[in-house]
Length: 494
Image (tube, rainbow, N blue to C red; front, side, top):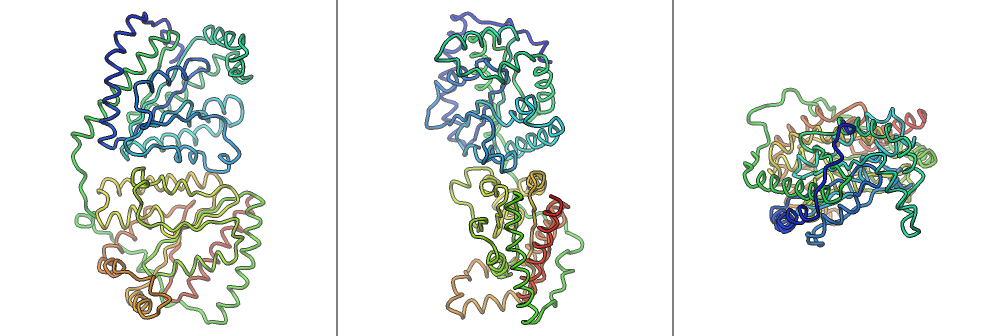
């Protein structure tokens, strides 16, 4: 594909100046409109070395308000970045609503330069490409505009530019051994680029090839494409119908119930609890040290009914862990900054690095429970979330993480008993709110939502464990036993 591109295209300076005289002020106006409509934008600059990406980024941002954009230069992964799932460092760099992120290099580095240099294997390509397409699809579905440019110059032109850069002390540092190697093997890199472009040129995030031999031509093409993309995104938002807000149960009743099968009569004696807890916590402490040594990350998710015992189970877990190696992330309603990003952004930021444990006291599953039932998102959003969550958790697993999800199950009578206890015991009074009582009134709706969630998001790589929680001691032991068994299995496979 790229070898068929006409690289002789050019504009005179006068032609370019005339076209830019209308494009640049229009771009400035469109940036303000994007901000008014809360449309986030990502603009990706990829392509061959020395093809002028940096120059064209400078040209693009010249008409823009600098308070409304940020430029990210993406190089090789740092040690810290490699200790997280592939897309972590890019999720954390996604823009807030109404702002623009510009990437000089991007997530495509892994499937281009890194594969070409051997830092990544060709066998890793399918998984990386799938992660990239999933990342872009989720963001676009969440309202993001993604504009992608791939800059192309000939082998001869690239060599000429390298020679020019190397001839000056002030610019010679910009040419690396890897750059020269890619020029030497130009045809192979073009072939790899073709493969990437074909796999990631999607209807929701398509590529624009920029013939970059002539800098004036490239400048006009980039600005013209950005202006067109901005105008189209603005028109789409202005004319888009509002999503339907409903929980989905009026038209489709769930059959069967995973929660109803839980035997809530299960219990253990005080002595058995004490003996098991002591042994399990000692074992868990040893496993935590081994996890760190072998750099195995762990993601533990706790969901459940209000007063279902999440806090107590988490406390018994963490009592056995080195406090330097875990973080408990309590998740409540998103704040203003979190609401201005994709709903998964705030959770990606808290994913553990290798050898560490992240515990989520409530999590991304709020999208398909609280937000669904309370009408905080439309039906299209929460329906889509099942697949988005599964994709995210699969990326954690593919990176080597142990992912376990616990649903703390109690019955309605037990919840009422615990609520009243919290109201009467001063040191527990802070745990009960009016909202807890209001949520209780929607028990049946929440139960249906939870059942569907368990069915649609319990996978081999990230299973749901229903914890029979009417007896707190039994529940705590089941949680720790499950974690210990999973960690032993993971460490054995290492």
